[in-house]
Image (cartoon, rainbow, N blue to C red; front, side, top):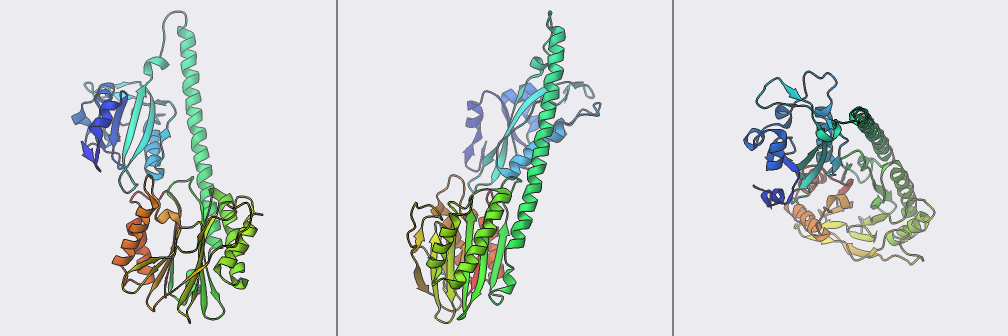
Length: 408
């Protein structure tokens, strides 16, 4: 079987354990011989069928949770792109040749993602080891002790799973608070730029991946506009808090500094006194609408893009320096300037838009340039939607993504 350019038959042959492949909608794509023998089902009875139609919960067990726990694990792998090792599960299986009769079974499942070329989860690798005989080990003098050990082991496994679920819920609540904090601190684009600016922010998929991406727009004297994006290293509330401090500091610095490089210099010095601000990246562009120039500087951030009216793309990469706080001693940052024509478009973004697992960033930048060229005539709002639709993975982005687009 071949999907997304990968020969999974070779993978199966290399795996001695019981393994099945599931699509993201939890329909069987394939299963190896070991899995079929262990489950008592043929490959034809599995492939193309929904997982829980083949293996539902035991209707005679009112406390059965195997199906719910397994579905939560698989959905989590699809959403986060991360491997999930489940606690020991009791999951009864109906005898294939005796409908209505169920066999008590115990399993140790591990679920892992299989990624497609675009970085999205295209399949789920569902590996299970049956531990029924181990759990139900009896005989000899140790029979009673084995029963006690079985009950204790099963109880501890259930408790561990419940604790893990509570931790996931707590992380989910933290994620909601962090997102609310981010939304409260970021500016409303409609109030800046005379309606020419469009902003999109997409949090990472998964409860544990809230990061410190931010953006800022500020109108300056002399018919100028300052546009910035940044990315704080880390996750959760702490990253969101650091993001707020740095965004506010840069917003103040850009109003008094001689240019974007001087503003980032001031931000870098300030970042040294903020815990968690080390290695933050940021890019700042000052648009002079009267002179038709863009002055810019970058602290380790992916380069802003100038989309010319004829569809050609210019990456603003002639003033790139290390991230904030990366140098042991302060050195003034570089600054560069370029000109633009009426009808050009400025695009700033964070790395979640262009970076993918196991892919060089130049590939992502080329993908962004091609998208902008194809849609050069779109207004800022439509272009922002199109960029996200074409560049973010189908299964959701694994990193926060902020995009600012301004029609000049």
